[in-house]
Structures are given as structure tokens and as C-alpha cells.
Length: 302
Image (cartoon, rainbow, N blue to C red; front, top):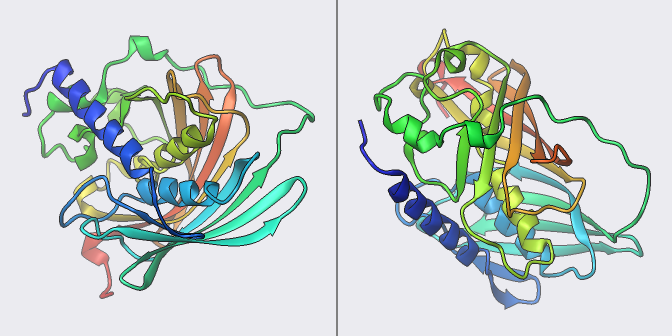
């Protein structure tokens, strides 16, 4: 069992947040070509959220006076954290109201990820939104990392990421290891808060950080209805495609509810949907992702 203090976890999160902000400052190589460094260094697979956020940042570098409202990406190869990532932007269309960009992330000459992004000028129109689910506020919940530290490291339902620092503080509505958390279920609401202040942001950086967060724990949500039948270490999981719609301006100065739920699984694939709400209950963004969910013992040769 890992023993650490809340202050230690806060320091680790602050460092991860600082590093994330640092790697979102991409190096411009040519007009439509950018290079990004990685959060983690070494022999690791790249986190999909990092590639999502950097690809969106690269697209933003070719656009002015409008914001991303729709992002659609495909994960094609596992990224290597020991290598930088090149982001090539294709300026598909510049319209009066909408702008379209295509971004390809490249390592060692191979595409590892592709993304289409649509940007729009600010406009007025009809307004409605689904209500936020009735869940406890973040002040009534405990830090996931502190809760995970009290659990055995080999807990069958515990993700390896649960005890690792992220750039976001996370507080699960179903506390890790609790009776409610261990039940088979279809949904997983989690409060998240970015661990650093985003100063002087026109909304661009906040949307890139939201893209990062939108890939946190999505595929694993597909396993929740089957917790009694399989442990996490028996399942191979990977993101396949990802869609993010940003409905309203995003602020990362406070807590956001990241409400995830799975609708179906079949053919070693699972589908997950999610929504981001602010503390006032305003719907900010929606997410859908299909992921590979395969039992390792039955996995065929690649």
C-alpha cells in the first residue's frame, strides 16, 4: 500500500499540469508543420489525450477569430513516448462562418493519429441543454489518489492509472473500492479539476486541455458492466476513434463533472459517451469514443 500525503499528491499533479502546459507550446517547423514533445519520457505508450490536445493545438495555430466546436479523430498506431510527434496540418477550407482543418500525427514516418476539426465564429442561436445528473458535489468526495493509496495495489478492479499523478485532480462519485464502485454498472461520473491556473487564455488553451481530459478513462468505462466476470489486468484496452463536441465556452478555473456511460459492447469493441458540466450544471461538451476491449487470454495473434 502506497503511503503519501495530500500535499505530495498536489505537488505531483502541479508538476504534471506544468509539464502539460509546456508541451502544448508546439515548435513550428514550417507553416503547417509542428513538433510536440511528450509528457512522459521513456519506453511508454503515448496517452491518447496528449495527442488529441496537441493535434488540436496545431490546428488552432492555423486559425484565427474562431473556436473549435467539433473534433473527430482516429487512433491508428500506438505512439512512442521516447520520440517527439510531428503534426502536419492540412488547411481544408476557410469559410465565412466555418473553418475546417485536418491534422495527422506522425512518428518515424508513420501516421499514428488523424483528426478533422471544425471551427466556427461566435454566433447567437437557439439555446437548450440536457440537465446535469444529480450527484454529490466535489466538496463531499475524496481525492481518488488518496483513496487508491488505501487499497491493495493488486485490487482486481483498480486501474494502474488510479494511483498515478495526472494533470487533473479527480474525485469519483462512486469512491474507489467502495461497495457501490464494485457493482456492475453502466455509468461513472467523476469530478475533475485542472491542477494549474490557465492565465491570459482566450479559450484556445482551455479547449485543448478539455480535449486531453476527454480521453481519461473512457475505454475502461466499457468494462464496468462486467466487473464481476473479469479483472482489469485481463483486458486489453485501446482507443480506436474519438469525437468531441464543444457546445459552450470552457473555463478550467473550477470543477467539471465528467459524466461517462457505456451504451454497448460487442465484437471486442465498446462504445462510451460522456458529457462535461460545470458546477452550475451547464453542459459544456459531449464526447463519444469506440475502443478495443478484448480479453487477453482469448486475444488472437496480431
